[in-house]
Image (tube, rainbow, N blue to C red):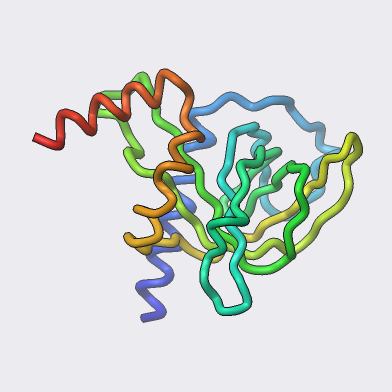
Length: 170
């Protein structure tokens, strides 16, 4: 069981590294600004954030679309306006590389993590740091969240996704 979890963590890390390779950084940080033990990649992407309830189940009605500020292979920094409790969360990222064929990531990447810190960054925005635990691969949850997760895609990517779905439904 422990080995299976390690494979899922490594798969999550590999997917996040691919995401950073396929997107453009928003700003380069200087060595003085970056004093972390892991490298952070400054990427601004729409992200789905779903908190967990006390019963350990995802709270779909409290989900939010937020923006990433930066990410690494072990966590993500989110910017948002609506507070949520620190603790377990699911983070959803859906990015379709429109230049590749067939299109990659035909489903969102869902990662289970823990919101561990939060601070106000001004303008009514809050920054929350999330440490990733593992991939979250509950097919029932994925089916429930798919319509909301689709809003993470650009208009062009949604069109490509719909076209692929029509081709695979036959």
